[in-house]
Amino acid sequence: MFAKQYTRAAVPAAYLGISSILFMYGYIKGDATFWMGIVLIPLLLHSFPPGEKTCRLAPVVAMMLLICCFRQELTWRFLLLVLALLFAVESLFGKLNGQFFTVLLIISPIFRYVSEVFTFPIRLQISAWAGILLQSIGLPVTVEGNSILLNGSEFSVDPACMGLQMTGFALLAVVFFMAHFRIQRQQSLPSRYQATLLVLAFALNAIGNLMRIILLVALHIAPDNVLHDATGIVCLIVYVVIPLFFMVRITYQRWGKAAIPPLTANKHHPSLLMSGHWVLLVICVFFCFQKPVMNIRSPKGAQAVAREGYVMQQLQTGVTQFRNDHALVYMKPIPAFYSSEHSPLTCWTGSGYHLSRISKKQVAGRVVYVGSLKKGNDELLTAWWLSDGRYATISQLDWRWKSLSENSDFQLINVTANDPIRLDMEVKRWLPPI
Image (cartoon, rainbow, N blue to C red):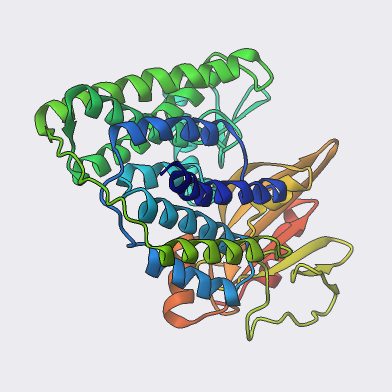
């Protein structure tokens, strides 16, 4: 019996072992959100014991295997590995609760990318609201995109600060409170109320971030001050964690239902199923040990062509660089509507620059993002947007929908210059005509 138990446990243990490859690639970041989610998993397994065994994830794993045969990006390999691990756990030990999947999503690199890119318009709006409130109490502040300026000091709403980076903490706090009250009250909560609580956590986090930036500016707490991070933590506790605790408790009191014990898992493990898991594990190892490919490739019809007045260079990553004495332009093809677009929000930061004062600007009838790049004593201005050659947009949903519905080949265009007049001139040259 014990030998069979060890054999069952060996399969998920092997998946966890090869997950270290993704740590080596730096794809999984062991930040505070990640480890908080990992610590939360045993509590979820205690409050939501595995149910009857199921192979419901088998079709999803098969589809992911097919995708990995044609797509070499590390994202697909990561999804295959995680889904194969979950498939092994559910088919060998028992069905997992939806909250377990929620935690895995929150601590995943996919959530980090979505929170940094898709919530960017929210950060701009929070900065605008904070500026209005600070001006209403008589402070001489000016708002430039996601930055608020006061007496020469700059305060920004970005993922590097305590604020929207706390989104993961807020969502994990909801899951923790739901698991806590489930154990305490022996009640379950309908899925619609669980989803509502997660949405409320996101909204409260935005409010907490608004209060954080107001306090930082009003009290003139600089980023290098130890109170800067402390203010973020206090706002998280006061405006997010404490309200969520009472919201979850009241929700369980009013809408909680008696928890139904899960069905007893079948102890029989067909040898064919075990063999299939080991074969799938070998396939996952094969994909994960392949050299990762950056998610930049030129789709059909998106090949860059030389432009007069620029020196053109095709980089190994698939990006095309155009350079002259006044500007630097990057054209970054996006393979598909579901792909990441290698935004300057991450690329320039990875090159050692600090991107700040990001705002929307209308140039030649089109709206683009503009920002300031600083590295030591160097300061540049940069602008970017997404285009298929005929249409330009800065909306994530807009370009992805057009790419899907119209089969358009979108690219991210990033123009950088050393002064605002030159930047406007260059942006006009690269924007498609209306």
